[in-house]
Structures are given as C-alpha cells and as structure tokens.
Length: 211
Image (cartoon, rainbow, N blue to C red; front, side, top):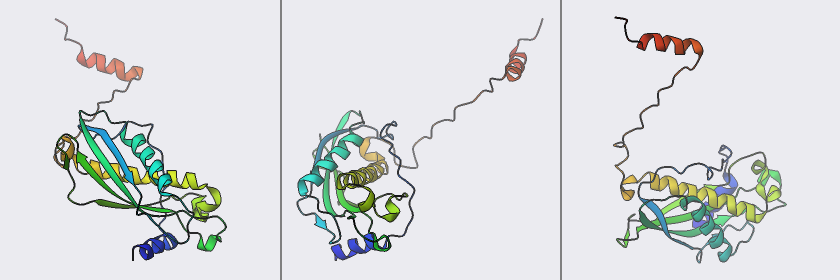
C-alpha cells in the first residue's frame, strides 16, 4: 500500500510549485535554545518506487546527515537537541522516460526530536514528511534527463530537512519559546525620509522656541 501510494504521487503529481530558493546563506529562523546534538539518520528499511534510479542505504544516510548538519548546524542555542530521521521511501526520476510519463522525484522521511539533557523524546509520534522536487523548466520534463542522481538526492534532502525545520518552528515551546500566537511581534522600525527638505522640516519642528 505504501509503495502504491508513493508511485501514484510520483506519476500523478500535477501541482506546480515555485522554484526552491536556497536559504542556507541567510540567518536561520528563530528557534530559541536549540543547538544540534546528535544527528542520526537510518535508511535500513527504505523502499524504492519501481520506476526509479537506485540509491543505496549508505548514500541516503550520508546525504541526509549532510543536509541536517547544513541547516541545523547554524543554530547556536544553549541546549542540545538530538534529531533522528528515518528514510522511508523514495523515487529518483530516471533518464530516458518520455516527457508525457516523466515521473517526479519524491522522498518520504519520518523525524523525531529529543531533549538531550533530559533524555526525553519531545514528539509523541514520529512526524512523517513527503517532499517532491521543486518545479522548474528542467523538472517539468523530469530531472532524470537534466540532473544526476546525486543532484536529485541533494535537492530532496534539502527540501526534507527544511520541512523538518518548519515543524520545529511550529513547536516553539520545545525550545523555551512562548506558544505560537503568544509571541510578541517585533516592533516596526521607524523610517526617516533623509531628503534635504524633510531633514530641514524636522529640524524646524524640534527646535526650541526662541525666548
């Protein structure tokens, strides 16, 4: 059943997504006390859609560990949190498939997180994510024609770990932050028109009255 559902998602995907933008060079979204502790990825039980390039357990574990390090290694909080990810299933679009039937690459993972000091799992059940390759002029015709297997795996791992980050952001109390909806929004920064006319007007309005 799992493989049938995954294959259907690959071959029947018609939802057009925006091209992905790599945000790793930007400041990370706030995550309170978070600092990455253990980075554990297992792919022993990964399942492959029949129409797919082959990828080994070791390849999936290596690329996912790197994606977790790249994203969560940016955080410098005061507490360690351990992330565990299971790679459940995948399809890597193969080359040589006609455009009309070109499958899209997909990755399914399950994530868990632990408070390291408390040795406590924070989520009651594993959180599963299904991510696709982002649509672009290349992926519309299937990245099996335009990308290598390594490039497909890197793109899927990036999207999967970014989805995990969004899940953590949605649970701020795990990291010493107030619940969503109770956090104080940042105050807007006042802007000043620096044109000469505006500067002169501001100076006239704040000048002390003459005695």
